[in-house]
Length: 326
Image (cartoon, rainbow, N blue to C red; front, side):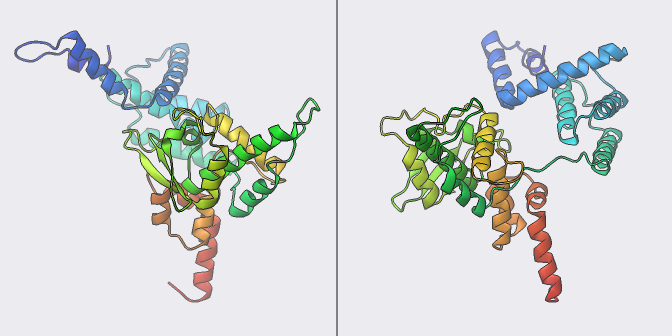
């Protein structure tokens, strides 16, 4: 029984809630996290339980030192610091669900995480950042996207297929940059979420995102060039529920961006994060401050946008010091 079910069925001085009310409470509480997040938490929790059983240690309620030992072993097996952060989140989630204190909410556990992150950086295992798809890179994709490609089997696309595929590639990369979309947001976008404006621009509505678990949504600006690319792939008979880019997952978005970058001759590790990183860098280079960038990209804190644009920020700092500015 989850903590939410226990609360719902605890009753009052008069009577306990009837089953329909209990189920509505449980369903609403579960919707506090997206389905993808809950699935990731379940997988991470099963791994922790398996490890704890093998070691003969209790998994719930777990002790902080148990969590720290698990994280240390996972890191020793080659897990990256970024991947490691899912484990304490999953442990917190399942302990809270069961009505237990969160063992990961402990200074010792946090210190171990910091130590593992620093060690990974010293050993050259720091997380690799996706290559930035800058305005220049987007121009290269636009110029090459419609060219026919030869697949692994040696077959070359038909010209008509290359044209249609290229139009989608251009629209995907352009809209992801303008709206600073995450890959999952691009995959989830439907035509009902797109509004074309009379001035040639467009607006896209993101219903739910990583930083918006409450589902408040956000309406984002798309410039004329990106809007024109969207119009080029919009069929008049398309259902409003149809996916804009026809890609069913964030991984598919990443693969599509990476393939478009390779075909355009761009060098680097391109992925679904690349348009967002590239726009962040371009905005900072054009004078946008970190606070404004944080708002534009819908980041929960300034840490990530500052990390993405660190080279541009460093260059601006060097110029300021050269001119004697504070």
